[in-house]
Image (tube, rainbow, N blue to C red; front, side, top):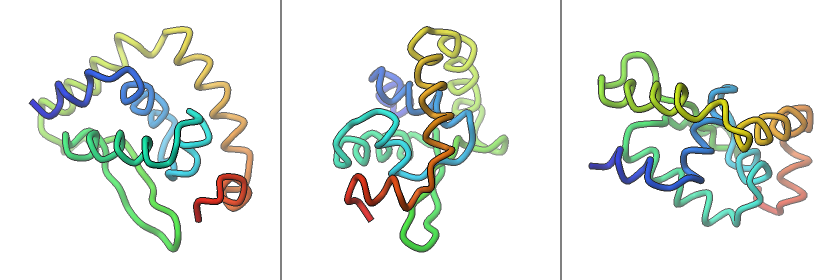
Length: 117
């Protein structure tokens, strides 16, 4: 049920697609989508609770990544479905281009701009 709830929101699916590029910190995800930090936090919490993403804290940043290959089958199948079904959308392509620019920017600069950490 948690996976279904997590995938029911298009913005959470967009976050999953963005995480295909690798581990991202919260400030990078916030920058990518332009959501309020509290909104990003809620989306990440739901995805984490569903087991679709993992997190780690390093200094002042919290990083998120897709669940690993050792995740339960249902999680791996859900992530595979998202990738196969939605990764080629125009929105995912636009997000991917924007993410490439964000990844070229120092995280500290992004955080100062967002006043988040």
